[in-house]
Structures are given as C-alpha cells and as structure tokens.
Length: 287
Ligand code: FES
Image 1 (cartoon, protein in one colour):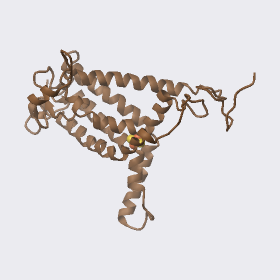
Image 2 (spheres, protein in one colour):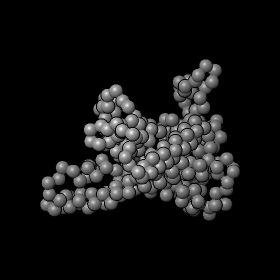
Image 3 (tube, rainbow, N blue to C red):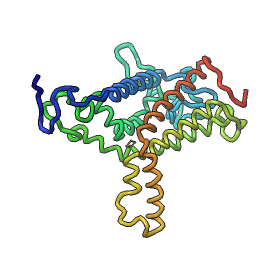
Image 4 (cartoon, protein in one colour):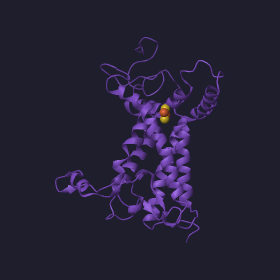
C-alpha cells in the first residue's frame, strides 16, 4: 500500500511513524504519572485542613500566609506568616451559588511553584508530547494543526521560567526552614524540646530533592555560566565555572530530579495529612 510522505521522509498523520520501537511508552507513562500528581495535588489543596501535624507542615501549604483556625489540622497562629484568616478573605473567597469553596491557604501560594514547574524545559517537552501531541515523539506524526506557532503567541509566556527560578530558589530556604521547625517539639523553635521524627526526615528530603531539581535548571546554568568570556581570568569567574560544572552535572539528570521531587512533595503532603488525621502515627523522639 502506498504511504503518504511529507518532506523529510516522515509519514503524516497523528502517531504515524516509521519508527519500530515502542516510542509511545514514555509519553504514555509521563501523561498518566503527571495526571495522578495533578489530581492528588488539587484534591489536597482543596481540603484546607490536616496540613499540619505537631511540628510538620505539608509542603503544598508552605508558607502559610493566613491560617484558618476553624479548620481541623490547621497550622497554629504562630506559624502563619501574616495572621489568622481575615474576614475580608472569607468574604472574597470564591463561591458558586450557595456552595462556598473551603478556605485553603494552599491556593494563596501554589501559583509560584506551579509557574516554575509548568515552564520548566523538561515539563514543556513532556506535555507538548504527551498532552498536546505536537508531536508525541521524534519522527512521529503530530496532531494536525492549522498553524503551528511553536513557543510564540501565548506560549511566549514560557520565557518567565528564568524569573520563576528565583521563586523556586526561595522555596528551597522556606522548605528547609519547615524541616528545621520539624526538629522542635510542637514546632516551638528554640523553646521546645529538640528531637527528630520520621516527618522531620520526610521534610528534609523534600527540601533537598527540590534543591537538586532547582539547581540543575537549564536557566540557572545560563545564569551562572553565561556571558563569560574567560572562566580562568578571575576568582569570580573561576567560582562561576565551579558552580556551572555542578549545575551541569545535576542538569544531566534533570528529568529524574523533576520527577522524584514532584512525587516526594506529594508523599510529604500525604504523610503529614495521614498523621494529622490520626490514621498513622509519627515515630519520633518526643512521644
Ligand atoms: S529547566 Fe527545568 S527547572 Fe528550569
């Protein structure tokens, strides 16, 4: 049977290809894996409760700007960066008819980390392949489009990635602080009893995985290694070269860190949530 060929030798039509390997496995598992994360993270963010347990704060809710003390498992007032949930925030909180969405501090802060992940070069690659199918793989036919614009028009917004990097970098410190708080009984830093629990370890791992992901970012490599004519001409440029090499070695496994840090943030939320709900008991040195 005659095949329809386009310029370059590729077959035309969605998922049409001369490839004989199982090219579809990667876009399929990334689509399903990311979908699971989106479903769980949205569900967790909507809850607005059980995000705090003794000294542990779910990373989905960090930092807590306002805490709604009427909710179960809410962060204590001392751990809210601004205050308890103010009346004006109650008043403007979205509602649909008589149904008012549950107040949740997560929605006040998630835009920052989400904008970073959503514009990450690796995430872009996989959602262009897995969800937009433009195309679903190398040398595989794409979803037909009237006019392919690439990363122009609305997708020119992807260029904010280099700026959102600074938000993500700030989160490394915020999440390490949360883990540090988890070293003190009831989160009473410097006044409570110093100890450690499984939750503390979970939170430290979470901050570290985020750091490994963020410090291997392509934009970060350009920031520290770009626009330098000579890497050996000054102490500053030699330091930049050293940092660039470290960022490059993390960057080589960027996909791995993207996935592991994303999965772990979900697991960390689940751990704090299950402890807060009394479903599991945290092993620690205090009790
Ligand atoms: S490219 Fe992935 S975090 Fe920047």
